[in-house]
Length: 259
Ligand SMILES: C[S@@+](CC[C@H](N)C(=O)[O-])C[C@H]1O[C@@H](n2cnc3c(N)ncnc32)[C@H](O)[C@@H]1O
Image (cartoon, rainbow, N blue to C red; front, top):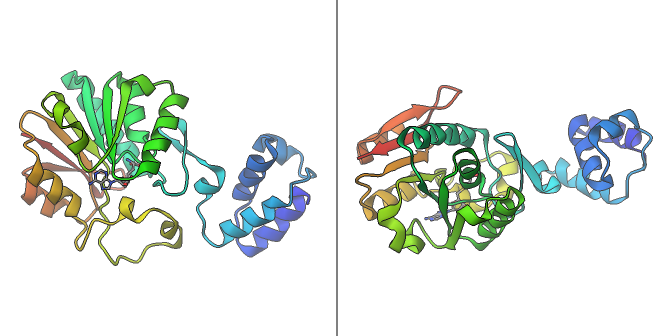
């Protein structure tokens, strides 16, 4: 079917023209600039299935299999969290600390697509130890590390918190994480239902991960930087004695603990 026909049909149903063109570009292998200039391009029938899926709220990033983060393209797949803009802020703060303190070894708990670990490795030259409780994120992170040429500085292991790297713990200078922090039972926008539960939900009050981590590890001498929910700052300050930093929307978003 012609792209121009698809655009008029699916815009009426509620899809954005921009998304229709990106999906067509993904399927035809032609650039979006080419498609904008050539609306007569024929698209394979499979596009109808993808556009209908998108109409039902299936995330665009899963359809395209890629996502932009900190100016780079990363692979993403179902079963792995789609990175969010707030996490670019976490990376920005981490880069600043790494440079200031000349940190060489960082741990990233819950790597997901690997955007934090890989961006830190690329921007600062650090080595990163990454963990995740799920296999799929570790696979996607490895692919992304290879894509960006840092697989020799990203060491990945399956397991919770920093348990898989116990023998390295003393040497770790900084721990970063964007953990699951959504409260159980929170009503999510439809797209989030396609994302992995373990990446999103942090128990009754959303704080299970932080409680588990800070109880388990003595972080004296290390820097800990974690993303948090906008209403969790006060609780987490009390729990850790740390400070809370805001995101660009002015909301409490990052917990910084230096003991
Ligand atoms: C919110 S996602 C973050 C993914 C990625 N770092 C990002 O910022 O886009 C949280 C990730 O942590 C993993 N995870 C959850 N609990 C964990 C734990 N206790 N130890 C290690 N990984 C965990 C999940 O499987 C998921 O991949």
